[in-house]
Length: 276
Image (cartoon, rainbow, N blue to C red; front, side, top):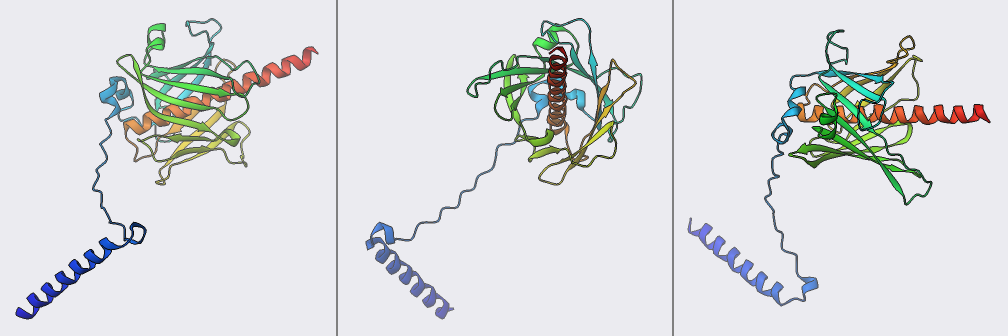
């Protein structure tokens, strides 16, 4: 025991001598002091605490989204393009063919009108609980796209918090209809369209995040239904919670919106070439 005490005392003296020696050295030669930070990240506030309408997705395993076209504008948002969002199973198959939508999405189109890369237009997409002007003007979730004329567009995801928008994530577009979702609630969720597709009337996306959570997304073209030709079957990753499913839904709606915009531009181009 006495031997251990003497050894400890000698080590302590050596440490003191070493510290005195180091203190006399120029600063660039002194060893940096190692500081260990103990930091706990603040727990994310559940989105239902910000807006109760998020609870529409509680227990929902997937959504079936039907794109519909209206001949007359019901909204001050001035669009004929609306998405009906129905509850579905984990594969995105609609649970009941006669079901009523649990949510809607409607877009306000404001495209960039110039080819100047420094000028950006904006478009907004509202995800609402009802299909009327009141809900569309105060949606529980809304997307704000920044239209970049000379590059890929980006889109911010906001949740309505007592009339103010709280940013909860953003979406970046990539090549070939790819989307990348960034949020504190998700870990790098991406949507990617493979090159090889076996069916001409269906496109299946690869959906996965950095934690290897995989989802399902199929875009179907219904050739026999002229009024409602496009549908999206989205199955949420099994481990996702309601907040993560909300962001997943927002990304699918945005994908549907940019696909609609792309078709409109193609149709306009075809129309112009025929009239020349």
